[in-house]
Image 1 (tube, rainbow, N blue to C red):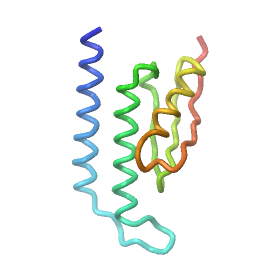
Image 2: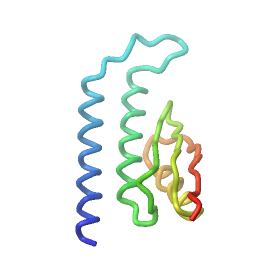
Image 3: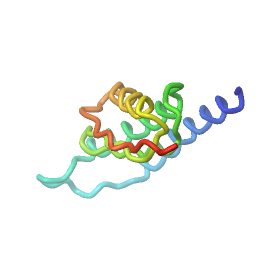
Image 4: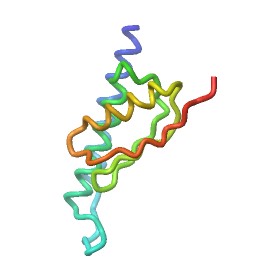
Length: 112
């Protein structure tokens, strides 16, 4: 059990380090009236990274098959979870992330 917890923590740290590095190296195109600003792009990347890390660390979410995408503070969850409780818990975990304006929970419940 300690090994699983250690792996989750290490994975979370690796995800955060990778996202911060990728965000730092990304050059955004010049914003137009219909595109996002550089600040929004960075904020969305930060939200996505934090949401992924929090999902990995959450003891009440039993799936690593959750994909997270953020656009202008709206987070989309896709992938699969083993139960309706896990789907609801994943949504709650992501809603608690600073900067999230809403969550589109499109997680599928895997057939057992």
